[in-house]
Length: 106
Image 1 (cartoon, rainbow, N blue to C red):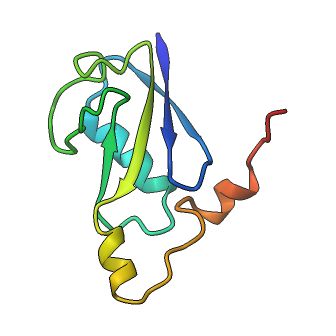
Image 2 (image 1 turned 30 degrees about the vertical axis):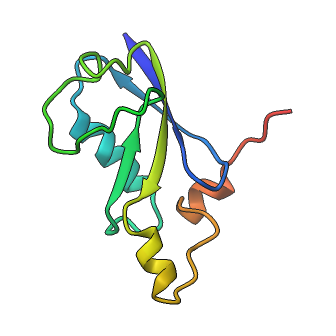
């Protein structure tokens, strides 16, 4: 049975994916990487209770407590370093083609 995992990036958008409870954390991290404009910057995912997910940990989504649904908070691990270097961060972390496909809820 598939379950929803919703990602909350800092720009206010929501990215939602459908996963099986037996899938492991690396699958979730791969999904997020594929959605990012800059997939080479290290990032963190945190569950609603503040639990930090670990990219290489072989726990299933069920074992992490992400089933039947979860809202994860996304943040770049190096965002402060980017700002300190004088580089302006992108307005959205998501790829432009995903932003173009956004469906606004009323």
